[in-house]
Image (cartoon, rainbow, N blue to C red; front, side, top):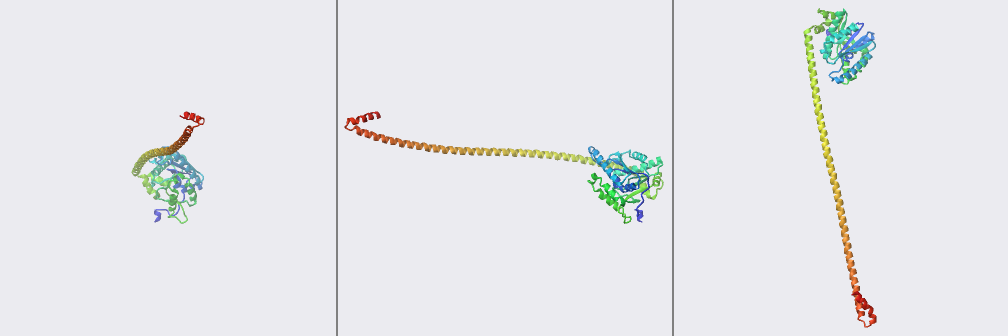
Length: 391
């Protein structure tokens, strides 16, 4: 009963002389079908990998060129790990814009005419990413157009990445898991955003659930042979292997509605992102204004602080000068008091000297008077002259 839902044995790699892999973004070719590509490389089957978009996501135009260069170079390095005989090319489309590209089917038909593959590997219509869905629908339409135009027998093998598909083919990739894991490590720019290696490893490990124990890793595909594609295109009842997928592709009304809804949803998503970016810019401007105001406030506070410091320094300087003046005044007062004391002492000394002189003079006058009163004229003559002189 389990075989109604998933194979219980690993399937054989579909035979092909050339293989064309279509990837919406750089890394889908490794995450989704890197094991199958490595197995074809081991069988020396030429594989051409065409990556449709730049992988720029929602990045602004100014950054897209650098992102494109980086992601395309990562894909080249990753494919080099899978083996020889694998080449690559890149489409002209922007990431998340494939739903709007009316030239997508014609672009794929040109690739088919150029590479003449017997097998095309593309994402499944069960994928959740709008670019994956657009690539899946365009791949089926392009294969049918080219098959009718060139009368070519070409099969379509659909891989899974973001959403499990209804599988009818499980490929045992245990023998090439190491090179697939090494190739996935090349996408450094994407691994910074999400641990994709862990997710893909979990998916490829889970796909061994219905397989024998010795199968450690498997990739799941929905394989439509050339006969299945012819049955789908003719409108006849398709083979059981492709009946579920045929319903997806042949119901034009559902496909048109899905595409219209997807485009509308993508437009809304881009509008929301633009609004979010605008809000982020406004928030950034507000933060910058606040930062500027904060800086101006800090500068004003610093100026006030410097003014206060200057005033304090001036007040301290004035206080020091006042203290020096006070000390100088006190010193002068002490000197004046000392001088006054010295003057008083000098005056006292002079008065004492004057009194001493007066006493001496009085004594001399007394002597003179005594001599003058003497009866000896000869003796007293000089004294009388001196007395007259003194008078």
